[in-house]
Length: 161
Image 1 (spheres, rainbow, N blue to C red):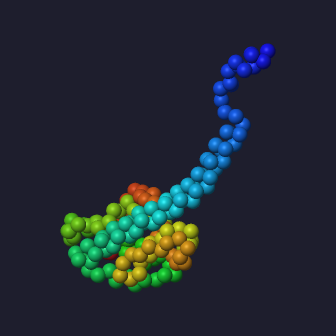
Image 2 (cartoon, rainbow, N blue to C red; image 1 turned 30 degrees about the vertical axis):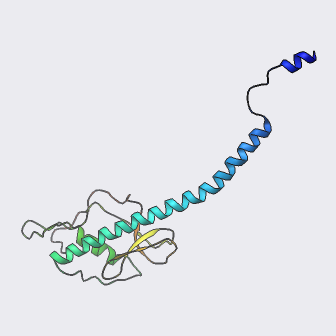
Image 3 (cartoon, rainbow, N blue to C red; image 1 turned 90 degrees about the vertical axis):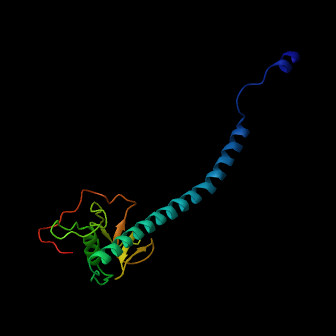
């Protein structure tokens, strides 16, 4: 009988102690990885938003070179000035008065206004657009990671940017 106990093959699988140790190691790895991952996604979203603001500012510069200076002063309490500038650079000039390169920015870009400190916002400062990061007070065009693209804006007859 003792002989049979010694010759018996061990069971396949993990012991309870091995399982607990493995779960503890996985928990420690997750505790380190999750905050790092959330910081990476937050900073990458801000980087993409900064690139979007630079694209808007390039469109403003092209508009100013080909047309005239944008006369819209900055008003930090509302987003009317942001929409005026945005629609100006999105306007395609008619055939009778063509402007080289118009529209200067994609007319399908239709953001919403936001004053929430939880959002990335794009604000007009009187000479160009700037990014308001999360936690910063102020109103502007809400940046939603590029999900603001919808069918193009329509402009009324006789629209003047």
